[in-house]
Length: 169
Image 1 (cartoon, rainbow, N blue to C red):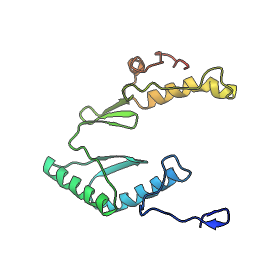
Image 2: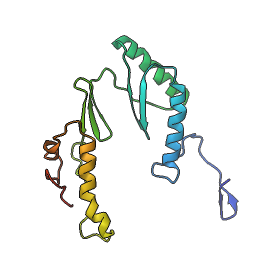
Image 3: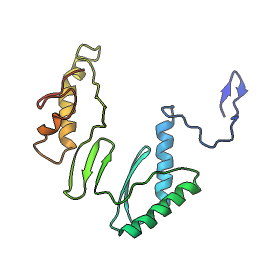
Image 4: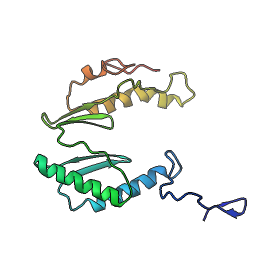
């Protein structure tokens, strides 16, 4: 029970959904709900990945079967008083910060349009060791999310970067 000034707090709305984005328990609640929904999707023959409120599923099905699966997923979400947006029959998808291509079995960095990454300024008050390893960490992340071993060409598409080291903002 939650108290405020020794008075029990009560909810004044009829809404069942009350977890604010960025709240203390927001991420944990999102993961619990995601696991619950995944348990309800187990009987559907597909591989599903979730990260917070983003999901991606892959299945070997005909377009008609895919539409039936989509309807079944929508029904499960509706039964839980949730909404879902589903795009089907895609060969290339942007999921979080990665572009996945099923046709070529490749993956690479995805940067949303007009999204300029901001990093710690080199004169910030972070510990010197942290500041020193940030460029290496970013380059390692960039190479890890690219199936192409020669990923340097990707860095030219990222604002604030060079092929060798990322610039500081």
